[in-house]
Length: 102
Image 1 (cartoon, helix red, strand yellow):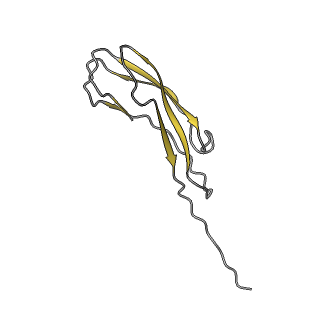
Image 2: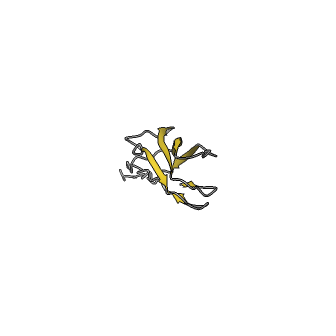
Image 3: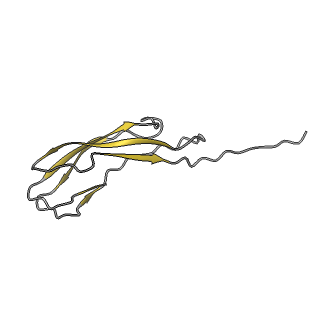
């Protein structure tokens, strides 16, 4: 989620992209890149959400992570406060132990 900390008088566009950490694009999540635009006269606190699809692979594994980075800003004099965030994918698969009588 990207939040404006101050109002903007002109439309502002910010680019973003994901990068692998311990999670791998294509098998753990779907890589994402693009841009979001805040309309002219957007007030402070306006939010834009970036969705990243997570792949449920039915494999028991440790939590994994990837990063989301903000890139180029166009449209006005805007400074990015925090340019990179880490997202953690928590595994939802459970180990099953089967005991057979002999």
